[in-house]
Length: 307
Ligand code: NDP
Figure (tube, rainbow, N blue to C red):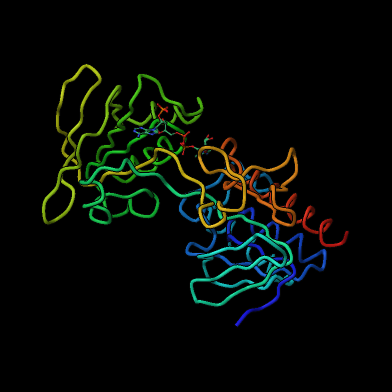
């Protein structure tokens, strides 16, 4: 069965919900598919202190739920489902969902976000869900008063390490260079924590474990020294990759898979297809910039549909 939709939005994060809010108010009758993680990456963070309008901060979960409700109240048709196939060669665009249903869309806003990267080690794969995680705020609770390691030196790694430091006995940060990439505010937070130890110039060789899960990490320092640390949890915080695969046959992307958009607009190389949020923005990746680009995408879609 195929259904015709005027404005289809894929992705339930700040970009998708904001696009939905604007598209609803412009009478575009938007339908939004939320994917596997309604609310997106923000539902896995703790408090957000830098989203304007919330003097005392707000939890990622609460912020996303508020945006979701706002989109719904204004008339967006919110649905669960993931796009598994797309044909953007002509209008209406044809999209197939994991349910097998087919959609014909007059315009499409891609706001599918980005997903956490893993190191690609066999041992890491083996212990996924048994001590290996890419989300401290989701899984940190299980490591109360225990020792854990966080890989990475960016803002995410610092944020995750700080969060874990409040729960765990000790947090090691495994950093591959002799500097952190993170902002100075985040670096300070890490430096101020008494139970975070940074292992500089270090790479993970192997995640160690047994039947019960992760027991440690084998680390190699740049000078060649190999040593093991004992931990029960191993958290990845080494960046993300954009969720653009299902559209990349049609929509132009950069070498890392981020969808290219035209200048300050959300227009892709396919007329009628727009991209917003982390799937097209490798630089800023903030809730507020994602929301802003969702707004831009809805305005661009409105202009396209009404021209
Ligand atoms: P980043 O790309 O900024 O940082 C990734 C980190 O992981 C770097 O330290 C990098 O090392 C390291 N790394 C990458 N690959 C490997 C590997 N294979 N092995 C070991 N280490 C590796 O990603 P983030 O997710 O931290 O941040 C993404 C964006 O989101 C940034 O713009 C950031 O500012 C923003 N952000 C902002 C927050 C806030 O404002 N509260 C919170 C979280 C994120 P190297 O430095 O050597 O490349």
